[in-house]
Image (tube, rainbow, N blue to C red; front, side, top):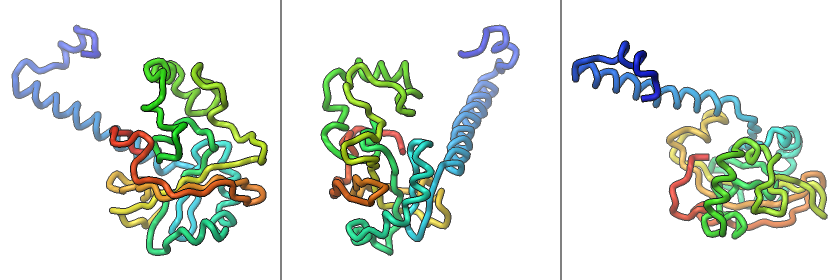
Length: 218
């Protein structure tokens, strides 16, 4: 239905069996292509790995800080004491106000977007400015504050969201994002990555900020 009628007629089969075969080929190609693109994306993510922890810098500009400070962050007693050496973890390294964090875990009421007002207007704004929102350059008309910045009175503060990874053998860093992997929110830490001063640390509920609403696999 997305092709000009003339082109569609030249490649379409006239028999029922031919139409079914064409449908199967297109479906397999579309779904298979999606998995190929997903695998390519996962293998090119900015990851840091050490022992049983894999970290992902959500914003490209945070990768250098993540690569430089993750070993020291994991050695902080409040963090180290919460990590089980028999478990695998994935850590999302992101700004404290990153707007999409509610899809990763329930980090607080501010990110339970399905409970907030202006839902239709907010989602419409995201549709028209998708990449600007993800990159942090665009300010939603419904938000007065920057939802991707690091500027705070305490200095350069990052949020680390720790999720336990199960149902998969983590042989290499990208395995934490395997299709079969189950990522369960565990705890989060807000800290100044320069001084390693922890500003907030709390256990996270199992559900994301969207509750039981189906969400994309981040």
